[in-house]
Structure formats: C-alpha cells, structure tokens
Length: 237
Image (cartoon, rainbow, N blue to C red):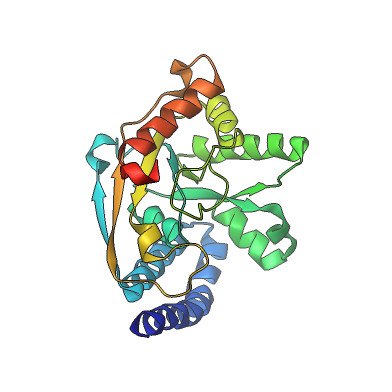
C-alpha cells in the first residue's frame, strides 16, 4: 500500500513538474538555443522522482572515467527505474535512442532535436544507418550516449542476448564503451509491476572499453557482456 502511494506521488510530481518546467524553461531554450538549463532541470526532476519512489542509489567506479571524456554507456536493463537512475549519474550531458515515431509531434520533435536525441527505427536498415550518423554527430559535439544493448527489459533479471546495432554504432563512432551493471533495480521494480519497493540500487561503472581493440563486433559484444556480468549476482548470469 505504502509502495503504491510512493509511486503515485512520484507520478503526480512528474505530471506537474514537467509541464511547469516546460512553460518556464522551454521558451528560454528556444530563444537561446542553449539546452544546458533544460537538461539540468530535467535531471533535477528525475532525481526527485527517484527519491519519491523510495529508491536509494549507490554508485561505484565513476572515478575510472575522464570527466571530460565522451562515452557510450551500455547497461543491463531490468526495470523502468534503470534510465532515470543511471542518466543523472553520467558525467555531462547524455543522449539516448528514441523511437522515430515520436518525432511526428512538432513541439516534441523540436525539443528532441534541441536535446540532441537520436531517432531510431527498428527493422529498417537505411534508417539504422541514419541513426548511426546522427549518433556520430551528437557524440562529436561532446554528448554521451546511453544504450541498452539487450533492446528490452529482462523479465527475470538475467542478462539477455545483446542486439548488434549498438555495437555497430560503437565501431562506427569509435568512442569508448563504458559497461554499467545495474544491481537490485529488478528487486525494487521488476517488469510488469507498478509499485516500487524500498531498496538501494547499486550501479557499477566498469573501465572503458575501446571498440578499436577488437577485430569483430562479436568479440566486442562478449567483452561488454563479460564486464556487465562480472558485477551481477551469480543467479542473474
């Protein structure tokens, strides 16, 4: 009951804070074309929402990263909480892959473009190539990328087979990959559940992996999977 109330409070906060922040910050962003205030406001809203759910966060390994570096962060994915827990911890601004269909709304499309988000269209090879090109442009501007190589949330917390697309992007862009292991978010809010339980999410940031050090995408995929798996409980391998 209490868990459900916490989640309702988090959703209500989000439903009020996002429109209000948009009215105050979005016009400034459109005028100045400077997305920093919009991004900082979004991260503050996300952090507050996570706090309202009752989830607490413990991060390890951030000291292994160059604060001025540009990376592709690849994480296991077991909960709806994963993106909103991980993204605010990543140093500097971060982009994500978003379904291309959402660009059909003009205002939303404008916001996405200003935020340097990357449209992705599954099962379309030409569109996938365009997504890689856009991701390269974004990262060349010093913006990180956050990707879930499994492509969907795991239903039992175990690591799923990786999709090849993110590793094609890594090979093409040449930016280092930072494997991230999310631990305990499945127990806090598993797929298919509404209310989050109280708990501490543990995030392990592993040392960066250079895609250019591997002769094939398969070898690169295995190296990233091995790093993520190394911090998972044995039952989740």
